[in-house]
Structures are given as C-alpha cells and as structure tokens.
Length: 482
Image 1 (tube, rainbow, N blue to C red):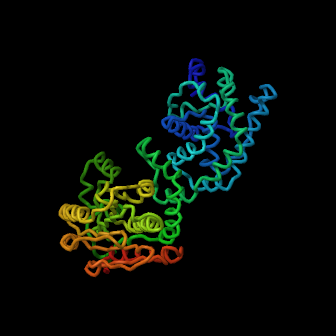
Image 2: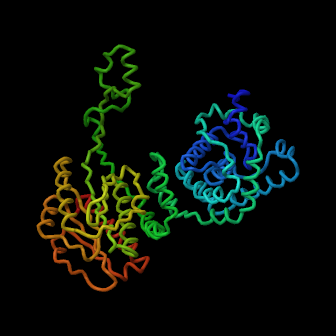
Image 3: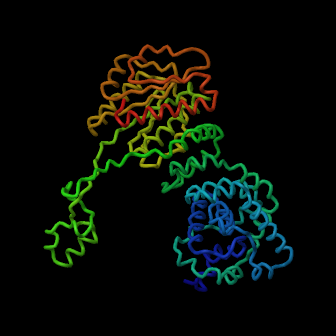
C-alpha cells in the first residue's frame, strides 16, 4: 500500500523518508516492522533516533546474516552535493565496520528478541545522541504504525519521501556518527555477549511488559558486578541443557486399549461418533473433539515444587554472592528443564517478592541486580517462610523442597526449623567465610546440606563442580530417589 501525498508530507513521511540514508538495502517490509517496534521502544525510553539509524544498527545486530553488506543508494545520494555524499560515505563505513565485528556476528547468530535489541540499541545510542549538538532540534516523534501494509512498496517511494522534507538534521547526525566512530565501535566491543547468551537461555526479555522491564535489562548490561555471576552461570548451565523429564508413555498390546483419547486414526474412531450429522462431525473433527480408542497412555506425575530461598544480605557480598546467585540460576534451569515448578525469594531481615519460573522463562535481571541493605533477622524471616510453605502445601497438596542458600552465620531457632521440616524437605547450602568452619548446631537436623569453603570459591573448576553436584542432588530429590 503506497503512501498518499498527504502522508508523504506528514510526520510519517518525514520519518520513513530518512530510510533513504540507510546503509543497508533493499528495504524488507517484514524487517521494517521490527524496525518500527525497535524505534517505538527507544522513543518510550526517551531516545529518538531517526529510523535509518535504528534500521542499520538493528540489522547488523539482529538481522539475517546475508543481508548486512552496507552500501548507499546512488540514485538518491549522488544527487546531493559532494560534501554531503562524503559525509554519508563516512557513515556507511562506520556501519560496515560494526557489521564486521565479532560481537555483531555472534549477536546475529543468536536471533535476539525485539526487547533485547531495543536494550542493545539504547546502550549504543545513549552516548551518541547525548553528545549530538543538534539533538534539541529533533522534531516531536510519534509511534510508528506497526503494519506491514505501511511498508510495502516503500523502496519505490523513497526518493519522493526523502525530497519532500528538509534532511539537514539527518545528515548532521550522519556526520556526528562519523566523527564519533571510535566511541561507537568501542561501545559495540564492550557489549557483554555472555549476558546476552544467559538471557537467551532463560528467554528473558521476551514479551516484556514495558519500559520498566526494559530498564531492568539495561541495568544488567550496565552492572559490572552482574558479569561475574553470568560467567559462573555459563560455566555450569550449558552442561545440563540436555536434561529433560521422561515422557512416561506406556504402550498397551494390540488386543487391548488403554482408554479414550482426543487424537488418533480413523480406524480407531469411537463408532458412536459416526452418529453425528455431517456438519457436526466435521466441526468436531476440526476442533479435535472426536474420541478415539487409544493404545497408549501418558502417565501424569505430580510435579514437585522447589522453593529457593536466597540470602541477599550484606554478608553475601563478593565471591559468596557470585556463587549463590549462579547456583540459584543453575538450579532454576535444571529443574525447569525437568518440568518442575520453581519459586525464588530473596531474604535478609525480611522476605522479598516471590518470583516464579514459568516454563523456560525466568526474570534473570531481577536476580542479577537485586540489592538490599536491611540487616539480618533470621528468626522472623524463617518463621514467615514456614507459614508460607504450610499454606502452599495445603493449597497445592504437595510437599515443597526448600533450598536455603546462605552463609555460615545463618542461625535458625530450633522451633522454627521444626516447623520448616514438618512441611518441607530442607536442603541447606552454607558458604563459609574466608576463615573458620561451619558451627551451626542445627545442620545435622537438615534433610541434606552442602558446605562451600573458601578454596572452592576461588577455584573456578571446583566451584562449578560443586554447583553441578548440588543440581544433581536436586534432580534426585525431584525423582524421589532421596
């Protein structure tokens, strides 16, 4: 659907016409729909780059690998004065250098979600636009329409769209990007690919609610302390990605049936289904409402509930925090791959918000960036936790497995521990200080516990091995072997 003359002269013509300066061609309507989504997300964050910049940087980071060879549009650009052509050529060269970086090549291979692309673009463009002298001359920006009909045939209209508006501001931005080439390339090289990979493993960033969630992702990329947790998690998680729950499928002999099912072949159709009128029968067939005799039966097992209580107090700073949070991520990934339900909650002097792992999705930014400065009150915290676990056990009719990841000074009163054990299987993970031993009097009353000493924390291979051992324990508990 071509834009009419009124639309060409409007703000949408002004915005889409800037795509004539794009270093990547031709324009694909499906990709332009993603570009509009990225541009709208950046606008909500307070950034307002022109669509041609969003298009070029977005595609070199998240576009198809074969469509990232930058070039200009000679039929449009060569009509401009020679100094302007040289400015645009310098911009195209910057895009070509970014497309050739290892960071861009890996990012394209991972097929990043739109939300992650918005975060990456915001990370790259914040400094560029912040230092642009003409940023206050940028006209007001509205949300681009999210319809492929708007972008169909746009390539043929670019010359008219480009010439219908003054493009001095866009060309000034091209010149600014060319003059800050080294800064932009440095920002690209500093993007943390390990964090992107971890977020992809947990599908974080997909279908996020809005600006607040995207700001959480930005916080992860800007948080150097989170990088150590990410690196440790990636030492552990990839080795458990083949984990899966057995299907529990039982096959019966050919002379007997297990029962009725909604799926099957026509020769196993329940004969009474043929009594329906033709139209009713066809509709029931389309809606998968017909009954068939079945030789196979899926045995349904009650999923266990795993509750991870993670100490977020100041005593868990440094290497202890890295191990604790990396272990929590590994446990969540291991158990969700097995189809289990996993809850996580931080605590110090109180219990914080409950976070659920939904399938393979989990709010990784929350775990990486959580901070608390409220001291410690273990009696109050675990008494509240015992009441909550009792409520969960009554409501869901299953016994939770409680993992307490904390340090060697976590003192739980005897009566509170009794309440916990009455409701849940309690697994303790205690991280020792730099000197000393575990001297908690209640550890022998736990169902199981692990002690992480200083030497293990400082040895990369040893701490990964210990984390895998704890995850294997969790799998045994899940299967009922412990």
